[in-house]
Image (cartoon, rainbow, N blue to C red):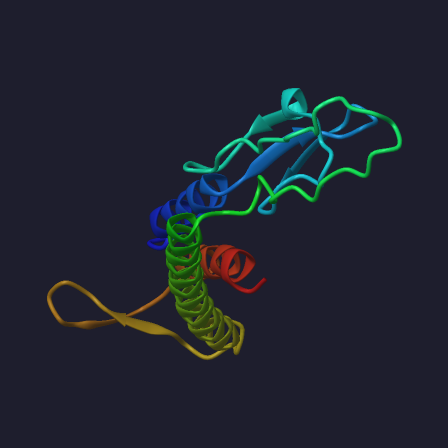
Length: 167
């Protein structure tokens, strides 16, 4: 189980990275929603519970009251991000993509290690169950035969390894 601390650290990193760019809001039915995208247009500001760092509240500009027959003048979109905000968002997206790629590479590396450990454990189990006399080298460098109790202990240890690594 040498890889368990590494796996725990990886899971923590994944959770920390995913929590970094999360939106949290209450929808029209009162359910709390989570997403990496902003809530739908028209979501009241009071219902937006959490934004990613650097995300600004949306400013809604309503036209001044006037005669009902007057056509509203086209307003400049208040929610259009500035060039600096677009660049910051692009930079943040690149960083997130880079972190996701590193995370995927790490997951693939761990999966390869697990496959290798699984194959070795299965091979060891076949050897243990073959019925052949098994030997190990002791601390003096001498070859000693395993008795039934030692073989049973090795089978149990190998079975645990297969259970944890061969998923």
